[in-house]
Length: 114
Length: 113
Image (tube, each protein chain N blue to C red):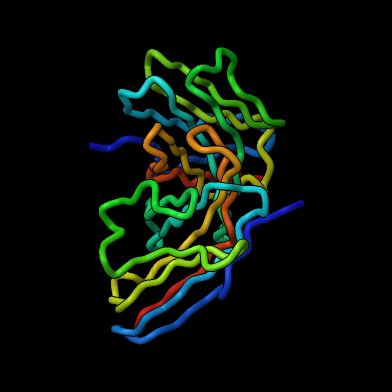
């Protein structure tokens, strides 16, 4: 069964460093998303991406975040200058359809900022 | 304002019994989708069930069913015949036309043997 994959599973970085989290969505899906979950808290929407551009972003997704689909398979989240409060689990998801499409989540990348 | 409200931070259920996890939502859109996800202790998010706002019948997927009451804006998840492996966090989520998906705070379900 096709699945969303994410690498790395765990990333440790120093405050102020740039990180890139990678995702490979399901191949025939057109909509891509990033979410984060701070430990013990709820899942928060960051950004949605369709047709090579951001379609929606939350207030969390500020100028230090960016997303890219550099080729036909990868979908990346870049955090330019990490802060301690960026430590969280980051989930990538993809769906075939928009509003009413079931979103399939990847296993997540745990980001730890020291 | 909270878009998705899950009022039960924790729930206990005896193995083999049914349990209902509550979810209420707030939207002015006519078209929206409601989702339930399971998050076991390993951390991954597992899709369980979906209900569209125009669906007249309650969604069912195996032991999961969604008790959709549109006028009350509630979308409760019912798990029948609970199993030990059902112990996990359960998140209700809603997707409106603007594409972003909002999650509730989650309910931690513990199934007792």
